[in-house]
Image (tube, rainbow over all chains, first blue to last red):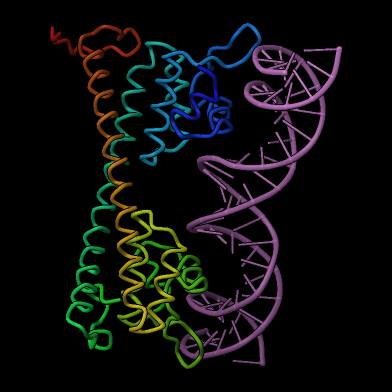
Amino acid sequence: MTIRQVSEKYGISQDTLRYYEKIGMIPPVTRTAGGIRDYQESDLGWVELAICLRNAGMSVEAMVEYVRLNRQGDSTMKARLELLQNQRQAIVERRDRIDRALERLDYKIRVYEDAINSGKLSWDQKHGDENGGN
Amino acid sequence: MTIRQVSEKYGISQDTLRYYEKIGMIPPVTRTAGGIRDYQESDLGWVELAICLRNAGMSVEAMVEYVRLNRQGDSTMKARLELLQNQRQAIVERRDRIDRALERLDYKIRVYEDAINSGKLSWDQKHGDENGGN
DNA sequence: ATACTTCTTTAAGTCCACTCCAAGTCAAGA
DNA sequence: TCTTGACTTGGAGTGGACTTAAAGAAGTAT
């Protein structure tokens, strides 16, 4: 698979794919005799993993470290497990913060809907901010 | 409440608090006669809102727009509701991506744990811990 | 063979969200 | 009065993650 096809498949630019490889966020991609990238299934797996974890907010740095450990073989397995567990925790915390923001947002949205539906907005003046009245 | 106290209360730097105000992410903060910031409850409400929504990944730009609309009064209520609804959707999508990444991460973590527990490759770090499992 | 497209590389540029700095003001204490 | 320390401002600097540019080699179509 060419870089163009991979780019289209995952909706990520060719530049970004090359960049991910350059910085070691994915291992070196298989090349043709002429030196052109020819992504194999295993290469695609790494690309997918990178996109998935970046989407969740995992840092490039952590991905690079994971790939580095991975290429050093079985002896780094425990370190890799720990890395993944740490990242997992960070991601769960991020999701919790999102959930709290959603609660707040939903409350505000309800207040706005009520205000608009009930025709009038005597609401603006009096409500303090402690319940999200902004 | 001084900027220092607010900074400590929310774990956010004084610079960031001033920055948020400067770019309009929160409305102008109440000042003393001498021009020093003296955060009132309503100011704190805005700060909290800003932190909460930034935590969820909402852009500074969207917050600025919301604050701008808010200061224009009741006539912008519908626009504000729409803004919040759009942001809500974006945040829900972000959470969904996080959930997908978590699934993937959990799977990988299980695989590592199994590999390590089954004693397959623990030359490096010794585990006394062998269950015959799988 | 010629023209066109797609690929390669390194390096510089961009965008966002802060973060830090320099220079100055203000209020209280020795 | 002088010093200390917290505050003010505008503007420059930083870090992360891309993104674009420049220059050239290789594959494809006519």
